[in-house]
Image (cartoon, rainbow, N blue to C red):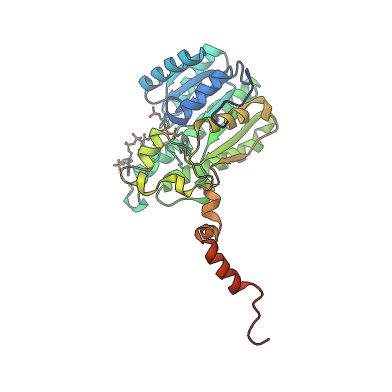
Length: 293
Ligand code: HXC
Ligand code: NAP
Protein backbone atom coordinates (compact mmCIF):
# COMPACT_ATOMS: atom_id res chain seq x y z
CA UNK A 1 0.00 0.00 0.00
CA UNK A 2 2.68 2.53 0.97
CA UNK A 3 4.37 2.06 -2.42
CA UNK A 4 1.27 3.44 -4.15
CA UNK A 5 0.43 7.04 -5.01
CA UNK A 6 -2.14 8.38 -2.55
CA UNK A 7 -3.40 11.73 -3.70
CA UNK A 8 -6.32 11.94 -6.10
CA UNK A 9 -5.78 12.60 -9.79
CA UNK A 10 -5.22 16.28 -10.57
CA UNK A 11 -4.37 17.17 -6.94
CA UNK A 12 -1.55 19.44 -8.20
CA UNK A 13 -3.11 20.34 -11.55
CA UNK A 14 -1.38 23.34 -13.19
CA UNK A 15 0.75 24.05 -10.13
CA UNK A 16 4.25 25.14 -11.13
CA UNK A 17 6.82 23.65 -8.75
CA UNK A 18 10.50 24.55 -8.48
CA UNK A 19 12.59 21.74 -6.98
CA UNK A 20 16.25 22.43 -6.23
CA UNK A 21 18.38 19.32 -6.69
CA UNK A 22 15.43 17.79 -8.53
CA UNK A 23 17.45 15.69 -11.00
CA UNK A 24 18.54 12.98 -8.54
CA UNK A 25 17.43 10.99 -5.51
CA UNK A 26 14.44 12.14 -3.49
CA UNK A 27 14.07 15.35 -5.51
CA UNK A 28 13.65 13.33 -8.67
CA UNK A 29 11.14 10.93 -7.08
CA UNK A 30 9.04 13.82 -5.75
CA UNK A 31 9.20 15.61 -9.11
CA UNK A 32 7.97 12.53 -10.96
CA UNK A 33 5.03 12.05 -8.62
CA UNK A 34 4.00 15.71 -8.74
CA UNK A 35 4.03 15.52 -12.57
CA UNK A 36 1.69 12.53 -12.34
CA UNK A 37 -0.63 14.70 -10.22
CA UNK A 38 -0.79 17.37 -12.94
CA UNK A 39 1.99 19.78 -11.92
CA UNK A 40 4.54 21.48 -14.17
CA UNK A 41 8.11 21.28 -12.97
CA UNK A 42 11.23 23.41 -12.89
CA UNK A 43 14.33 21.45 -11.86
CA UNK A 44 17.53 23.21 -10.91
CA UNK A 45 20.98 22.08 -9.81
CA UNK A 46 24.61 22.47 -10.82
CA UNK A 47 24.84 19.60 -13.33
CA UNK A 48 22.74 20.62 -16.31
CA UNK A 49 23.37 17.36 -18.22
CA UNK A 50 21.96 15.35 -15.30
CA UNK A 51 18.93 17.65 -15.17
CA UNK A 52 18.28 17.48 -18.91
CA UNK A 53 18.43 13.69 -18.93
CA UNK A 54 16.15 13.43 -15.88
CA UNK A 55 13.70 15.95 -17.40
CA UNK A 56 13.48 14.03 -20.68
CA UNK A 57 12.91 10.72 -18.86
CA UNK A 58 10.25 12.22 -16.58
CA UNK A 59 8.39 13.83 -19.48
CA UNK A 60 8.41 10.49 -21.29
CA UNK A 61 7.13 8.62 -18.24
CA UNK A 62 4.40 11.09 -17.23
CA UNK A 63 3.53 13.16 -20.32
CA UNK A 64 4.17 16.30 -18.18
CA UNK A 65 6.33 19.37 -18.79
CA UNK A 66 9.73 19.89 -17.13
CA UNK A 67 12.07 22.87 -17.45
CA UNK A 68 15.66 22.12 -16.42
CA UNK A 69 17.72 25.19 -15.43
CA UNK A 70 21.33 25.16 -14.23
CA UNK A 71 21.83 26.84 -10.86
CA UNK A 72 24.13 26.77 -7.87
CA UNK A 73 21.88 27.66 -4.95
CA UNK A 74 24.82 29.34 -3.22
CA UNK A 75 24.69 32.02 -5.91
CA UNK A 76 21.77 34.46 -5.61
CA UNK A 77 22.15 35.62 -9.24
CA UNK A 78 21.69 32.03 -10.46
CA UNK A 79 18.42 31.80 -8.55
CA UNK A 80 17.10 35.05 -9.99
CA UNK A 81 17.79 33.58 -13.41
CA UNK A 82 15.91 30.37 -12.60
CA UNK A 83 12.93 32.40 -11.45
CA UNK A 84 13.06 34.57 -14.57
CA UNK A 85 13.19 31.57 -16.90
CA UNK A 86 10.35 29.87 -15.04
CA UNK A 87 8.13 32.95 -15.30
CA UNK A 88 9.01 33.25 -19.00
CA UNK A 89 7.90 29.66 -19.66
CA UNK A 90 5.06 29.15 -17.20
CA UNK A 91 4.09 32.69 -16.12
CA UNK A 92 4.46 31.78 -12.42
CA UNK A 93 5.89 29.53 -9.71
CA UNK A 94 3.45 28.32 -7.04
CA UNK A 95 5.62 26.05 -4.92
CA UNK A 96 9.29 25.86 -3.93
CA UNK A 97 10.93 22.69 -2.63
CA UNK A 98 14.30 23.41 -1.00
CA UNK A 99 15.73 19.94 -1.53
CA UNK A 100 19.34 20.61 -2.66
CA UNK A 101 21.90 19.56 -0.07
CA UNK A 102 25.53 18.66 0.44
CA UNK A 103 26.83 16.40 3.17
CA UNK A 104 29.60 14.03 4.22
CA UNK A 105 30.61 12.16 7.36
CA UNK A 106 33.79 13.23 9.09
CA UNK A 107 35.20 13.92 12.54
CA UNK A 108 34.76 17.70 12.80
CA UNK A 109 38.36 18.36 13.85
CA UNK A 110 39.49 16.96 10.48
CA UNK A 111 37.44 19.53 8.53
CA UNK A 112 38.76 22.75 7.07
CA UNK A 113 36.61 25.85 7.44
CA UNK A 114 36.02 25.62 3.67
CA UNK A 115 34.52 22.15 4.10
CA UNK A 116 32.16 23.51 6.75
CA UNK A 117 31.22 26.43 4.48
CA UNK A 118 30.64 24.15 1.48
CA UNK A 119 27.86 22.28 3.28
CA UNK A 120 26.28 25.16 5.23
CA UNK A 121 26.31 27.34 2.11
CA UNK A 122 24.33 24.75 0.12
CA UNK A 123 21.93 23.70 2.87
CA UNK A 124 21.19 26.92 4.77
CA UNK A 125 22.27 29.72 2.47
CA UNK A 126 20.87 27.89 -0.57
CA UNK A 127 17.47 27.47 1.09
CA UNK A 128 17.56 31.05 2.33
CA UNK A 129 18.53 32.38 -1.12
CA UNK A 130 15.74 30.54 -2.94
CA UNK A 131 13.12 31.39 -0.32
CA UNK A 132 14.06 35.06 -0.23
CA UNK A 133 14.22 35.50 -4.00
CA UNK A 134 10.91 33.78 -4.64
CA UNK A 135 9.24 35.24 -1.55
CA UNK A 136 10.03 38.78 -2.75
CA UNK A 137 8.54 37.94 -6.14
CA UNK A 138 5.37 36.47 -4.60
CA UNK A 139 4.91 39.46 -2.29
CA UNK A 140 5.50 41.93 -5.14
CA UNK A 141 2.97 40.11 -7.38
CA UNK A 142 0.51 39.53 -4.53
CA UNK A 143 0.53 35.80 -5.33
CA UNK A 144 0.20 32.99 -2.82
CA UNK A 145 3.04 30.54 -2.37
CA UNK A 146 4.07 27.37 -0.58
CA UNK A 147 7.60 26.38 0.48
CA UNK A 148 8.62 22.92 1.60
CA UNK A 149 12.04 22.48 3.19
CA UNK A 150 13.67 19.06 3.39
CA UNK A 151 15.44 18.82 6.74
CA UNK A 152 16.24 15.76 8.84
CA UNK A 153 15.66 14.72 12.44
CA UNK A 154 19.13 15.82 13.57
CA UNK A 155 17.99 19.39 12.85
CA UNK A 156 16.72 19.33 16.46
CA UNK A 157 18.79 16.55 18.08
CA UNK A 158 22.10 17.45 16.46
CA UNK A 159 24.42 14.64 15.34
CA UNK A 160 28.09 13.88 15.73
CA UNK A 161 30.14 13.47 12.52
CA UNK A 162 27.78 15.53 10.33
CA UNK A 163 28.15 18.85 12.16
CA UNK A 164 28.01 21.20 9.13
CA UNK A 165 24.85 19.49 7.89
CA UNK A 166 23.28 19.50 11.37
CA UNK A 167 23.98 23.25 11.70
CA UNK A 168 22.60 23.92 8.23
CA UNK A 169 19.43 21.87 8.73
CA UNK A 170 18.79 23.42 12.16
CA UNK A 171 18.98 26.82 10.50
CA UNK A 172 16.54 25.73 7.80
CA UNK A 173 14.08 24.59 10.45
CA UNK A 174 14.37 27.99 12.17
CA UNK A 175 13.83 29.67 8.80
CA UNK A 176 10.70 27.58 8.23
CA UNK A 177 9.11 28.39 11.57
CA UNK A 178 10.10 32.07 11.57
CA UNK A 179 8.86 32.91 8.09
CA UNK A 180 5.71 30.81 8.49
CA UNK A 181 4.56 33.42 10.99
CA UNK A 182 6.02 36.46 9.28
CA UNK A 183 4.74 35.69 5.76
CA UNK A 184 1.35 34.17 6.57
CA UNK A 185 -0.18 37.60 5.94
CA UNK A 186 1.01 37.36 2.32
CA UNK A 187 -0.59 33.95 1.82
CA UNK A 188 2.80 32.18 1.90
CA UNK A 189 3.01 28.87 3.78
CA UNK A 190 6.29 27.25 4.85
CA UNK A 191 6.59 23.70 6.13
CA UNK A 192 9.32 21.12 6.49
CA UNK A 193 9.63 17.37 6.34
CA UNK A 194 12.24 15.40 8.27
CA UNK A 195 12.92 12.07 6.56
CA UNK A 196 14.81 9.24 8.20
CA UNK A 197 16.91 7.04 5.93
CA UNK A 198 15.55 6.79 2.37
CA UNK A 199 18.11 5.05 0.14
CA UNK A 200 19.57 7.31 -2.56
CA UNK A 201 22.91 7.13 -4.34
CA UNK A 202 23.87 10.63 -3.10
CA UNK A 203 23.15 10.05 0.58
CA UNK A 204 24.51 6.51 0.74
CA UNK A 205 27.80 7.43 -1.01
CA UNK A 206 28.39 10.45 1.24
CA UNK A 207 27.13 9.09 4.56
CA UNK A 208 27.76 5.33 4.44
CA UNK A 209 30.92 5.02 2.34
CA UNK A 210 32.93 1.80 2.17
CA UNK A 211 32.48 -0.59 5.07
CA UNK A 212 30.14 1.77 6.96
CA UNK A 213 27.17 0.58 4.94
CA UNK A 214 27.42 -2.93 6.44
CA UNK A 215 28.69 -1.87 9.83
CA UNK A 216 25.90 0.67 10.42
CA UNK A 217 22.97 -0.74 8.47
CA UNK A 218 20.28 1.96 9.05
CA UNK A 219 17.47 -0.64 9.26
CA UNK A 220 18.80 -1.93 12.55
CA UNK A 221 18.13 1.43 14.25
CA UNK A 222 14.54 1.75 13.07
CA UNK A 223 11.66 0.42 15.22
CA UNK A 224 9.52 -0.19 12.13
CA UNK A 225 12.37 -2.38 10.85
CA UNK A 226 12.96 -0.98 7.38
CA UNK A 227 14.15 2.11 5.52
CA UNK A 228 11.67 4.47 3.86
CA UNK A 229 10.18 3.97 0.42
CA UNK A 230 10.40 7.05 -1.83
CA UNK A 231 6.66 6.91 -2.54
CA UNK A 232 5.94 7.41 1.17
CA UNK A 233 7.80 10.71 1.11
CA UNK A 234 6.16 11.65 -2.20
CA UNK A 235 2.66 11.09 -0.75
CA UNK A 236 3.31 13.12 2.38
CA UNK A 237 4.99 16.03 0.62
CA UNK A 238 2.41 16.18 -2.19
CA UNK A 239 -0.23 16.71 0.49
CA UNK A 240 1.85 19.30 2.36
CA UNK A 241 2.45 21.46 -0.73
CA UNK A 242 -1.08 21.09 -2.07
CA UNK A 243 -4.06 23.33 -1.37
CA UNK A 244 -5.51 20.49 0.75
CA UNK A 245 -3.00 21.57 3.41
CA UNK A 246 -4.01 25.25 3.27
CA UNK A 247 -4.25 25.46 7.09
CA UNK A 248 -0.81 23.93 7.72
CA UNK A 249 2.15 26.23 8.17
CA UNK A 250 5.31 26.25 10.28
CA UNK A 251 5.04 22.49 10.73
CA UNK A 252 7.79 19.89 10.54
CA UNK A 253 6.64 16.33 9.95
CA UNK A 254 8.93 13.43 10.75
CA UNK A 255 8.86 10.35 8.51
CA UNK A 256 11.48 8.01 9.92
CA UNK A 257 9.88 4.77 11.16
CA UNK A 258 10.46 5.92 14.76
CA UNK A 259 14.25 6.20 14.31
CA UNK A 260 15.02 9.38 16.25
CA UNK A 261 12.72 8.60 19.15
CA UNK A 262 14.35 5.20 19.55
CA UNK A 263 17.66 6.96 19.99
CA UNK A 264 16.14 9.48 22.41
CA UNK A 265 14.35 7.37 25.06
CA UNK A 266 16.60 6.64 28.05
CA UNK A 267 15.51 2.99 28.34
CA UNK A 268 14.70 2.23 24.69
CA UNK A 269 17.69 -0.11 24.39
CA UNK A 270 15.98 -2.43 26.90
CA UNK A 271 14.09 -4.01 23.99
CA UNK A 272 16.98 -6.49 23.86
CA UNK A 273 16.11 -7.83 27.36
CA UNK A 274 14.60 -11.36 27.07
CA UNK A 275 11.27 -12.47 28.63
CA UNK A 276 13.14 -14.77 31.04
CA UNK A 277 15.24 -11.86 32.17
CA UNK A 278 12.10 -9.71 32.63
CA UNK A 279 10.68 -12.49 34.89
CA UNK A 280 13.77 -12.28 37.09
CA UNK A 281 13.77 -8.49 37.06
CA UNK A 282 10.08 -8.43 37.98
CA UNK A 283 10.70 -10.65 41.00
CA UNK A 284 13.54 -8.39 42.04
CA UNK A 285 11.54 -5.15 41.74
CA UNK A 286 7.87 -5.99 42.39
CA UNK A 287 6.46 -5.60 45.87
CA UNK A 288 9.92 -5.49 47.38
CA UNK A 289 9.87 -3.89 50.83
CA UNK A 290 12.82 -2.11 52.37
CA UNK A 291 14.63 -4.48 54.85
CA UNK A 292 13.95 -2.19 57.87
CA UNK A 293 10.09 -2.67 57.66
C1 HXC B 1 36.13 16.25 4.45
C2 HXC B 1 35.62 17.37 2.51
C3 HXC B 1 34.93 16.24 2.02
C4 HXC B 1 34.87 15.08 2.85
C5 HXC B 1 34.83 17.79 0.53
N1 HXC B 1 35.52 18.29 1.55
N2 HXC B 1 34.44 16.54 0.80
N3 HXC B 1 36.22 17.38 3.71
N4 HXC B 1 35.47 15.13 4.06
N5 HXC B 1 34.22 13.98 2.47
C6 HXC B 1 36.15 19.61 1.64
C7 HXC B 1 37.15 19.86 0.53
O1 HXC B 1 38.41 19.34 0.87
C8 HXC B 1 37.15 21.39 0.45
O2 HXC B 1 37.91 21.96 1.49
C9 HXC B 1 35.72 21.76 0.76
O3 HXC B 1 35.15 20.63 1.43
C10 HXC B 1 34.92 22.04 -0.50
O4 HXC B 1 35.03 20.91 -1.35
P1 HXC B 1 34.57 20.95 -2.87
O5 HXC B 1 34.67 19.60 -3.43
O6 HXC B 1 35.25 22.10 -3.58
O7 HXC B 1 33.04 21.41 -2.66
P2 HXC B 1 31.86 21.43 -3.66
O8 HXC B 1 32.30 21.11 -5.06
O9 HXC B 1 31.16 22.67 -3.40
O10 HXC B 1 30.98 20.15 -3.21
C11 HXC B 1 30.13 20.20 -2.11
C12 HXC B 1 30.18 18.91 -1.29
C13 HXC B 1 29.92 17.68 -2.17
C14 HXC B 1 29.14 19.06 -0.19
C15 HXC B 1 31.54 18.81 -0.67
O11 HXC B 1 29.92 16.54 -1.36
C16 HXC B 1 28.64 17.74 -2.95
O12 HXC B 1 28.56 18.36 -4.01
N6 HXC B 1 27.56 17.11 -2.48
C17 HXC B 1 26.21 17.12 -3.12
C18 HXC B 1 25.52 15.80 -2.99
C19 HXC B 1 25.35 15.31 -1.57
O13 HXC B 1 26.20 15.61 -0.69
N7 HXC B 1 24.32 14.55 -1.36
C20 HXC B 1 24.03 13.96 -0.03
C21 HXC B 1 22.90 14.64 0.63
S1 HXC B 1 22.37 13.52 1.87
P3 HXC B 1 39.46 22.47 1.27
O14 HXC B 1 39.84 23.06 2.57
O15 HXC B 1 40.24 21.25 0.91
O16 HXC B 1 39.42 23.48 0.15
C22 HXC B 1 21.79 14.31 3.15
C23 HXC B 1 21.10 13.38 4.13
C24 HXC B 1 20.87 14.02 5.45
O17 HXC B 1 21.88 15.48 3.30
C25 HXC B 1 20.22 13.12 6.49
C26 HXC B 1 20.53 11.69 6.52
C27 HXC B 1 19.81 10.92 7.58
P1 NAP C 1 21.12 13.67 -3.56
O1 NAP C 1 20.54 12.81 -4.64
O2 NAP C 1 22.59 13.75 -3.45
O3 NAP C 1 20.50 15.13 -3.75
C1 NAP C 1 21.17 16.30 -3.54
C2 NAP C 1 20.88 17.21 -4.72
O4 NAP C 1 21.33 18.54 -4.42
C3 NAP C 1 21.57 16.80 -6.01
O5 NAP C 1 20.62 16.73 -7.06
C4 NAP C 1 22.56 17.93 -6.29
O6 NAP C 1 22.66 18.18 -7.70
C5 NAP C 1 21.89 19.08 -5.57
N1 NAP C 1 22.86 20.10 -5.15
C6 NAP C 1 23.95 19.94 -4.35
N2 NAP C 1 24.62 21.08 -4.24
C7 NAP C 1 23.91 22.00 -4.96
C8 NAP C 1 24.10 23.38 -5.21
N3 NAP C 1 25.13 24.06 -4.70
N4 NAP C 1 23.20 24.03 -5.99
C9 NAP C 1 22.14 23.36 -6.50
N5 NAP C 1 21.92 22.06 -6.31
C10 NAP C 1 22.79 21.39 -5.53
O7 NAP C 1 20.58 13.23 -2.14
P2 NAP C 1 19.11 12.89 -1.56
O8 NAP C 1 19.28 11.77 -0.61
O9 NAP C 1 18.12 12.77 -2.66
O10 NAP C 1 18.81 14.19 -0.70
C11 NAP C 1 17.73 15.07 -1.02
C12 NAP C 1 17.33 15.85 0.22
O11 NAP C 1 16.83 14.97 1.22
C13 NAP C 1 18.47 16.61 0.88
O12 NAP C 1 17.99 17.84 1.39
C14 NAP C 1 18.86 15.72 2.03
O13 NAP C 1 19.50 16.41 3.08
C15 NAP C 1 17.48 15.21 2.44
N6 NAP C 1 17.49 13.99 3.23
C16 NAP C 1 17.81 12.81 2.65
C17 NAP C 1 17.75 11.65 3.42
C18 NAP C 1 18.05 10.31 2.81
O14 NAP C 1 18.07 9.33 3.55
N7 NAP C 1 18.25 10.20 1.52
C19 NAP C 1 17.40 11.72 4.76
C20 NAP C 1 17.09 12.94 5.34
C21 NAP C 1 17.13 14.10 4.54
P3 NAP C 1 23.99 18.73 -8.41
O15 NAP C 1 25.13 17.90 -7.95
O16 NAP C 1 23.65 18.63 -9.87
O17 NAP C 1 24.10 20.17 -7.99
